[in-house]
Amino acid sequence: MWTIFFVQLVGLISPGPDFFYVSRKAMGDSRRNALLASLGITFGVGFWSLVVLFGLAFLNRTVPSFQYILMVLGGSYLAYNGFKMVRITENAKLDESQRQSKETTAWKEIIKGLMINLSNPKIVVFFSSVLAGYVSNLDNLSDILFVLLILMGSALVYFGLIAFLFSHRKIRQFYAKYNHYLDNLAGCVFLLFGTTLIYEGLTHWLG
Image (tube, rainbow, N blue to C red; front, side, top):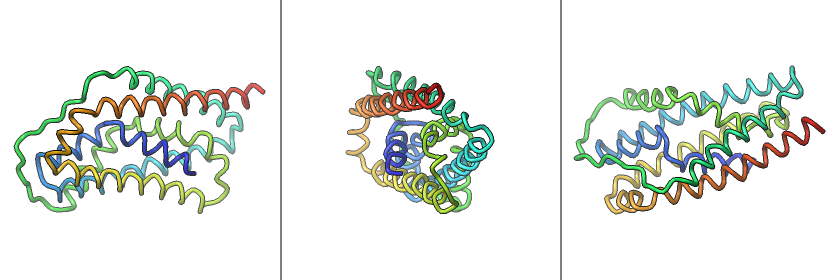
């Protein structure tokens, strides 16, 4: 279970649409709206997690070898992305436009964050890759709910921290200077986890 948490955390650290949306909300709008966007993104993570968890559980029951095939495919996806990330040498650019607080309703801000997350179906591939080797060991509903809690809880805490931290000028300057090193580190973890999945998948599938 803690491996799932660790890889999920590494995946969150790597900048994507959710990260840039929350960080730009924090820098260019208001901390309140950035936190509400974080909540909406967390709901999106919960939705995709349920789709993957129940979908994988069903497929593993009907096609026993599917788990090992998915481990190879998912590991290849993670390793490929890890390879690209370790080659990054330039920092991602953040738009530090003038901050203008826009007080809209909480519901609208949550929906905006939710839609940002739902518009990126690549998260399904990522979750499938991370969970490929573990779903078969989830014997009951409580185990699935615990994994769901890990995925949603880590997302909420991470994006909440981004909303708070990127409200401060010094943090924005630090990230702008060193974010490609975070990409490189995340890439190494993805490569390690991906190659492990490929090896274990091939061993069980062809063994």
